Image (cartoon, rainbow over all chains, first blue to last red; front, top):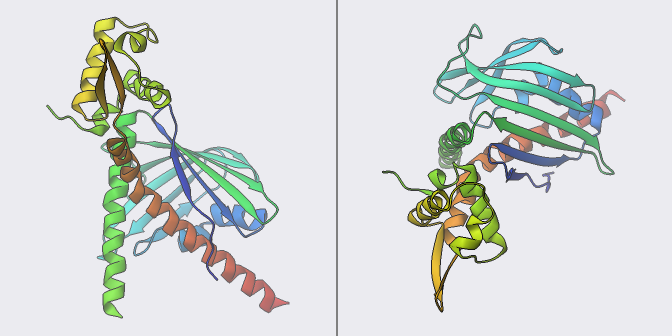
Length: 164
Length: 109
């Protein structure tokens, strides 16, 4: 069974913010768990062929999720997510940044300010992710990275098809 | 100097000009009236937008009107496309996870 729910991405008129919206055919408590339980996050957070691996997770205000994304060639990049505000089954505000394996920030990548909002719908749950940046230049940098990642993914998917 | 769509949208005044032009074609004077900055500053922004290929001018009688060059604007959407793909892949995996969780729950009953 594949979902027909559409992922919508729009750029805020202010220029330094992206809005990502998506509906899920699952009840709100399940969606909340998938976003906040690291053993579940590890199963979906990294887009294939990457995988996510949690090093530590402390889901509370002031707490931190430290994880790495592992690429098909075993390349690994670490990210940290600092939780700033949590409203159970409603919203999570956090700051995400790239870092080393001990969580020390690497300065050359822009920080992202996330706010994920969850709401029950007639058929499941809708999620809105707002991703804000300090500047439009930072947004550009991240989207370009997304491009790189998207391109790498496309190549990975091609590998899979060719291997069949 | 680099002139591309991303440079064009990197400035708030230029974004505002683009927003105004989505509604209608406008003369340089009409555009400038929307901003506190000097007419020269606004026309500099118009010049950059033109050089980036996002807007073009048409002459109607004695007036010059600026309007959006829509194919170029689509490049900005194309630019977001891989980002959308990333999120789509991620969310499709989450859909699969929910199906797995549901199946597990059913097995337990």
